[in-house]
Image (cartoon, rainbow, N blue to C red; front, side):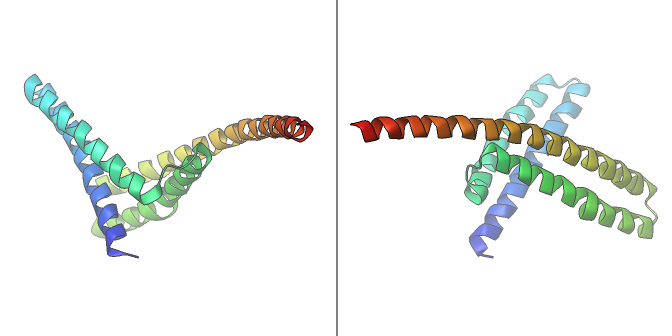
Length: 149
């Protein structure tokens, strides 16, 4: 893997984490009565998100909806089959019950998310197929017109 790709992945992860942290910090600031600080965190979080999107676009381009759904399914599946089971096993080994419970919860939620994305993809594929048929009919009609000229 190229150094540039590794750097883009690291930058994407860092900007994504900063976005999430700043949203959380805004929540904490607001709960403690610091509305101005919360708004500053939210403003900065919005900028971090735009940075992350820029890095992501360089990594994956501009995929179509079907590919986005497939990548989402792949990501959620990785979470419930590898990432969180590994986290859980390591938390068990360390005796960290809170982290074990968190991993178990995330395993279940990631399974649900993957299943939901699969259902959305199945529904969307019906629409993709219907649109492909319409586009094919249009292309054939245009071809007939072209050939008649």
